[in-house]
Length: 271
Image (cartoon, rainbow, N blue to C red):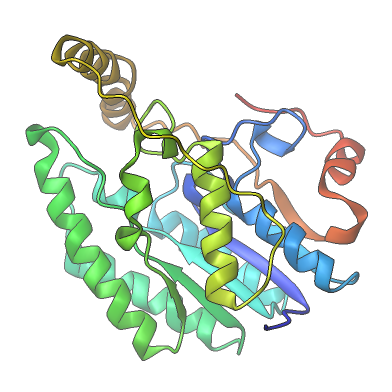
C-alpha cells in the first residue's frame, strides 16, 4: 500500500469544509471527510501536515481568488480540489466558462507537482423544478473526468458510489453529507490514494420504506426549510460562508491531534 508524506491541502466549499458532519470540538463546528483523511495520513508519518482552506457556499471564482495561490505557496505534496457545485445551483450559469475556469485552476495546481485529487458531484435526486441543475451536474462530471485524465489527477467518482443513494448518507438538507456520508467519503479518498486505514464504517441496516403521506410531508418540509431559504439568500446576494474563515488556514501537524489543536486555537464553533 502507498505511503503519503508531506502536506495535504484541501480546497473548496462546504463539501470539503465538512458541512453536515457537526462537531462542536472542531473549528466552524464541523469535522468532515478531509479531517478524517488527514488523521489517517498522520498515522503513517508523525511529521505529516494538513491545511483546509475550504469555506461553505463559495463559488468557483471565489475559491480561485482566495484559495489557489495560498495553497500553492504552502508547497503541498497532496491537494484535493472540489469546486463548482454552488455555481451549478445558480439560476443561470455559463457552463463553458465555468469549466474553463475550473480547468485553469487545476492546471495551476498541477504546476506545483503535487498529487491532485478531484471529485465528481453526486447525482442528487431533485424535484422537477430543479431538473436543469441535475443536467448541469452531469455535464460538470463528464468534464471533471476528462480533466482528471488530462492532468494525471486521481479521481474520486462520487457520482458512481451507489451507497449514497441511501438517504442516511445525507444531512436533512439533502445537499450535504451526514457524518456517516463523510466517513464513507474519507474511506473512498484513502482508497483512491492507495492508503490503508482504520476507519470503522457503519453497516447500514435495510431502510424501512415510508408511506406516501410521510414522504410528501418530508418533501414539503425540505422545500420550506432548505430550498426556499437557499434561493432567498441567492436573491439577496448573501451566503452562509460570508465572513467565515477557513477551518485550518495554516498547516498543522496532524500527529499533535486535531481536537487538541482546535482547543488551543480558541476558535468558536459555528452553527
